[in-house]
Length: 273
Length: 319
Image (cartoon, rainbow over all chains, first blue to last red; front, side, top):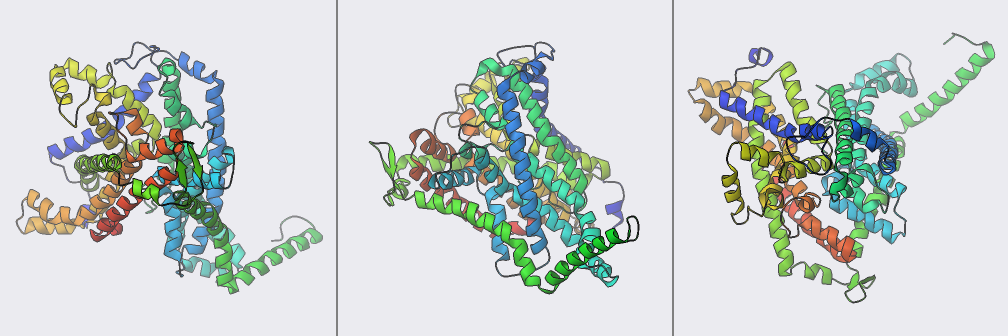
């Protein structure tokens, strides 16, 4: 076991080159988005960029449609996160330690909305809303997002609960705590970061979701839908670049933070969408 | 419990606490009731919203679409499923599956060295850096990544610029004249679409592979070396077979994500429908929701078969 703890062995150089260039490949598009947001050019994607400017940020902030799309995306993400927190935590509390008939089926039901291709989840929700004559809008988007966000909260909370030794709760109760007090003073503090990580992931997932949303949104535009519509309009390129940068930062940075929070705890924070 | 407040306030608080305790004790003694009370809201939600949605999908796939009136009538029929076997639709399925398979193989080839290096040759801060280096592109907005690639592949974009600089423009143009791969420019070629798909799903391949490689005990590799195996032999006969379920687990993501995508095929690559774009077209501009619903049976069937194979190969233990 000494080699596990000691310094890492030195990799052969072809492997090192392949690994680092793979990581570089993953970041080139992200870096380019960041660079183009400051580009002075108005109508094309020519490389290298023509000059440096900050004015597109002001231009984007002055656009009502951008602001409306951001507001809608944030509202949807907040509602979906709240719903997922409630449903995911309840399910995790019930299912963390007990085996019962149908448990696998329930787990499958949680995973399916995100494991099925988005187009299937999307069109299924679309068809049930249509069958029920529900007008698409804010609430249909939020209901869809809640459905696929439950699993990330559930995964985080259930992993944390399983690592919490039952002896700790028993000890609390042996010392005279009621079930409620034991939950409040022993379980809750342990769950806090898992809940936080779960909600950040759910928020990021919802904020960024495009495919399911296109089927449940009707005429409303979330930020990703706004971006998608923008791709067909070469005239508005600079504002699109700025918004793209913002969306990327809002989605990715908190999620890296969530991973940091649950690092080394075998939680499956970001390993499956 | 005797901090602030007079006796009456304390009495009230004690009383409230006793009520809470009584409730929690009640449920502690009736675990089954407690369990079902906890489970009721999530079960109701998934039963009504999600199972309801899937049921509505299957139900409406048997409705009739009138080609002349362009309207859907609730007359039940299996015609939509029969139509799946039309030659044009089989072309769509083959086109999508070939792309999904190519993307999966490429992701495994590009991703394995990254996952292997991460798992075997990094510790502490360097490993953290690699994790963030994979997670950041994975979670950076999907539509932004697709958008970035339309900029990268465009004429005047960075690839054409680099290729011009190093004098390989002729080679690129030659590559684009090849059948299947080519097109009039990178952004309208299958090569371009393949690049975007591979980029988009690569992190989903790296993470399960990395987890599987991490689980291979280091002493097995040492034993192999002690017994005289060259590094390549150890890799091929010890590490790869043990890590292979991780590759299969990753391939589930790359394969099914490509199979169901309908945004990237719209933005990059030649015309010609994919499963996703077909479903979207039927549902959207044609207004034939029954046909769109029936078409979703295709990816579900293919993915089920794929999952069956993956299970045989031990992929679920690696997830």
